[in-house]
Length: 454
Image 1 (cartoon, one colour):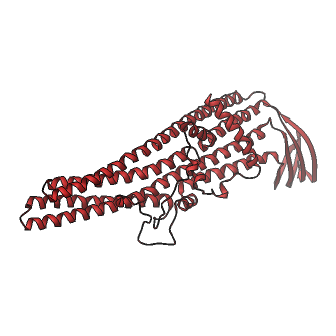
Image 2: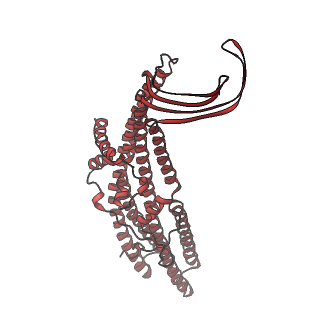
Image 3: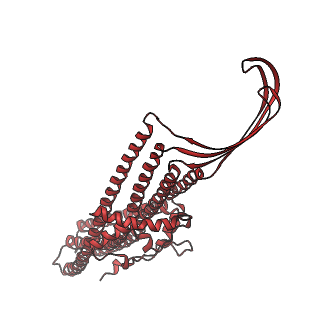
């Protein structure tokens, strides 16, 4: 009964070693997609910023050297005449002992920004995966529509041959032949539109993955990742969605930036070592060497209100980050709710479309039998053919829409890459001791989610 609803398993002309499953398509896109490369570059750049900030923990070593001509006419108010070739060579080592916690807070701020950028990268990969999955499924749907359109053309050609034979026997008129030919032209036009749509989808696939689809395989969704209720879906989204995690890290980074800007209220203490090896200094011929090690302190008594203004600006940036975090929660909850509704209602809609196909099939067969015995007009038969064709297309679309809704719902909970069993590149992972800190931050994420929810 549903022989024209069979979903094609293969796309393209023949099997190929270049065939990509959905999972392979996404994995390839992760390595080559320009948008993800841009996000990854931002992620790596932040690591270098953190390393630059960390350098303030280490000694700063500088060498000074100079040589040239020196002429002195007066020295200490006395007339003095000296012409010498002056040479200077010095070494300075400075170790910061206390910077008002500026370095500590700056390193911590950049660490949170690194984690936020990592989550933003994962979020972009999640969204790209969903987009590829939808295009991938649309390609199967387009092939199904093409096959239905080809069958529709064949059915109209069979009717046309039948009517032409009847017209030769005087049982049908020329108007009947013209009417079938008109419907056949419309069917051919529909086939061209379906093929054009498939070419467009292939171009979109190329834009995302980097190569054209050759031999695709119909993906299956892991039902274990589908939440049973809307409340469960929202809870999963709050706990797992990378955009929520990124917004929480941004708030923590803003807090550390505010602490860093407060460092101007503290004194700066350094340990300095100076060694100089000079010749012919100040008009006196001969070596002039010295060395010293000193504990230095500097304290900014008044800077025109700069430190206060920076601290207040950082406080407002923290409020901005908190507002973005709260808005992100709302958007994720809204997106999860919309995805759940689509998943729930498309599944019900599919059942009605299946009934539509069954009834349209019965109608088409009955009208054809009644037409043969003269109880139905040719127009009734042609209309029943179109109704059956549209019913099959609607059912085909609903079947694939349901699958896309499943992937969309899993994406809304932040688990699509995991469901697809696609490993993110090792380069995307946190380095050094960041993994341990990230585990500790997961607890902060959960507590913050509860706080925002309340």
